Length: 231
Image (tube, rainbow, N blue to C red; front, side, top):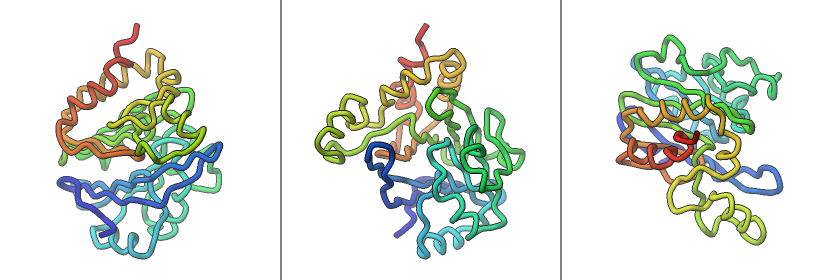
């Protein structure tokens, strides 16, 4: 199956890995969320295939395509072409990086009006790529893009494996990489992380790593607690 049910109104799709700076490969995961009216939100879209496009279309009308930070934008145009009625919504910085796309709105701490009863949003400022985290109320699912990662221990080789280990990218459970710990040390970021830790999450999905199927709130508090409490 190209779409895997993960909770009420939540589906996951695994995408082909992408190669980023310095040759680091990243596995990719897209999440499909259902709104109250049956419309769909596609978060961090992966490279589309015909089978994946058809599976998404079978679930309902696509209302929005979301780039949660300026690093996750590669396939927005492909999905926009497949679903031209969908709005493109993005974290700060995406519109400037992709002037070829029509970004309908910038996401922050206030969700779009048509999401208000279904999805909460929270912007985590940082100096690498400001990221918008989502919380899907129906399923109790929090979506975290790059702020939590855990690639398999054997995902990288050679010097990249050493760097990934030092950066805490290959921990057994999704963990905040050291580079983001340094990038998100501001007062606003810490306050935003505390708000995320208060979400009544049951599940957590990350773009690069293992989804958390239960105990989501406790997991978020463990993952972000040290950063959120910095003086």
